[in-house]
Amino acid sequence: MTRLKKDKVMSLKAAVKAFVRDGCHLSIGGFTLNRNPMAAVYEIIRQNIKDLHLYVHSNGQGVDELIGAGCVAKIEVAYGGTGKFAATCIRFRKAVEQGSIQIEDYSNYQMTLRFLAGAMGVPFLPTRSSLGTDIIAKWGFSKALRRSEPKLPDYKLVVMDNPFPGWDDADKVVLVPAIHPDVTIIHVHEADRRGNCRMQGLTFADVEQAKAARQVIVTCERLADDDELRRHSDQNQIPFIHVDAVVPVPYGAYPTACYRYYDYDPIYLKAYTAAAKDDARFAAYLEMIRATADHQALLDEAGPERLAMIQADADTGYAVNLDRR
Image 1: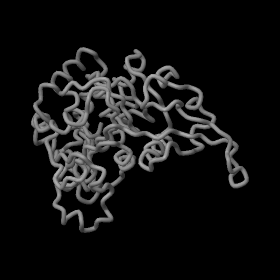
Image 2 (image 1 turned 45 degrees about the vertical axis):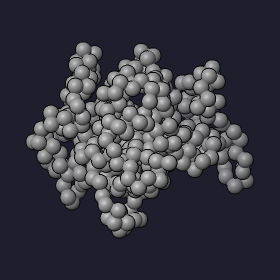
Image 3 (image 1 turned 90 degrees about the vertical axis):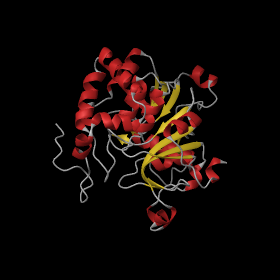
Image 4 (image 1 turned 180 degrees about the horizontal axis):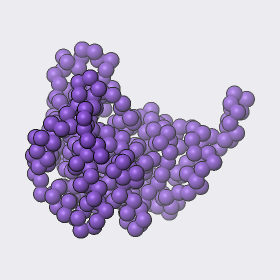
């Protein structure tokens, strides 16, 4: 088994080719403009992988670029946006409006519970989240689609009577189904060759997404030696038993942020937003992505001054005096 190997380091191109295939159920980590696994996203676009069933918590840039590149057929999501750059991801919204992708939406908390259920190995978890909202009533995936795809649960969710009414005052609870992605891709701060991972700052739902998946690709800012991650091992969130591939990619979340390493790039993201609003300009943008050999080539296009501009301050973990307008 790949998860028992002592050395799981491989190139990003090889990792994506080995694990991400047309039609697979893929989960990517990160949150809005934070720690999206963008190097892997761009490699999926370069390899022209199609018909993905995508699961995300509240991702932003990664979702928009994968959908804009035509890689995604279906998505299950709580939120897709990039903050001030796009309250709702632009190509994501366009695809939904045009009906070129199918979408099933849940609340933020429900998506966290769904990944957690997958990680725990249970079929569902209960919550009160979404009671009284249209999340209950409106389903994106039809019953016919659910019957035709064995990886989909039969129901978006189930509302049932609270089985413990004397203990709690809730009349109803919502059962949300577990997620088991074929592949999860996350970007972390440090990983060793076996796949032990360490993230700094907020982890979002990345840990649950990794543990719920059948296979996991980890891209990392820095490849650490075993002894380093053994020290203060309480700071490691994902053990090697969950990881299949380790890919060292400095600036692997760029143009999104990686706390304590670098901030998001507002120049890149403003230019992307402008391009995403226009079909012809977005097509040219995708050609630029496909023309780059790898993530380092994209960083070379940005240039050393841009990367210096977003370097994180040692005390705050963010870039200081960064013009975010």
